[in-house]
Each structure stands twice: as C-alpha cells, then as structure tokens.
Image (tube, helix red, strand yellow):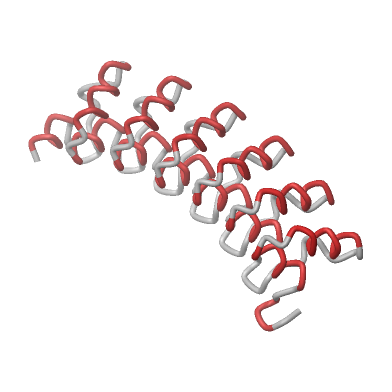
Length: 212
C-alpha cells in the first residue's frame, strides 16, 4: 500500500475501473483492507457512485458494514451522496440500515438532511428505523422539517414517523418548522396531527417560535 493506505484495489474502486477490480479480486486482493482513515474499497466505490464496482465487491464477499474511523458505513456515504442504485445494491445485499456514525447519524438521517428523497423512499421501503435519533435527539423528521424538505416530510409521515418525538432540548418537528418559517411543512405536520402546543424545555410553543 502507498502512503495513506492506498492499495491497488482501493485505487481501482475509487476510479471505477471495473475490469481491473475483477482482475484484482480474482488474484486474491484483500477486499476489506482499509485506508488510514478506515475507508475500504467498498466505501470508496459507494462514495463515488460506481455501482458495477459495488456489485462486484458485494459478490466477492466484501464486508458491507465496515465503517470508517468516524463510524460512516458504505451505505451512509452512498445515502449522503444520493447514489440511489448503490443504495439499492447495498440494501438488497443486507447492509445494516441503521448503523450510525460516531455522532449518531444514520443513513436515513443523512439522506433527509441532504434532501435525497428517492434514497429516503428506498430506505423506508427497506425497513429503516424512522425515529432513530442522533446524539442530540434530532430525528430524521426533525432534520427534514428544519431543512424545509416537504417531500421528505410527507414520506416520513406516510411511513409512520413519530410526529412529536422531540430533541434533547424539547424541540419537536413542528417547533423546528415554525422557527424556520417553512409554511408547507407546518401545514403537513398539522394535517398529520402534530401536537400544536407541545413546548420546548424553555417553554416555547410552535406559536412562540413562529412569532420569533
């Protein structure tokens, strides 16, 4: 391996050279040998969106859930980048849907934050945990509401996400949407039955937040 831990397989995966990847796999290259930061060949192929390389590594038996030093998995990075075909390949192969980073970010949370609605649908259909929160209590619905991603909010609501699950300081999705002025998201949450008067730890209600 070169400085940083670059192996020939890692480099081929990074650049999407499928035939080279096949040749290295057949020759017995170590599938899961990681870079110094913990990124595996599969992680890099997922980050770059090289779906055929991802399929080749999966078929060869690469570890689907081996994470980087910060806890980010191949599925997590694919979700963050919006690589839908890669996400499908990983979920169908049995990748851990809810494995979170060191700070508690799940693949679903990441996709919601980045606005990748098709990826969110794919994760929901695969059975991802809708209400799994990060370290500060932010849920996927909270981050989608914060960012004003209406399609995302609808998808989570329809899938049965908890409308009133609050962050560590008591902020509900509705509170967050009101504070940001995302009117359509506010409408969607109210129509779905969100609690109108559930207050934050400091006593602020959705109406307080909207009034600024």
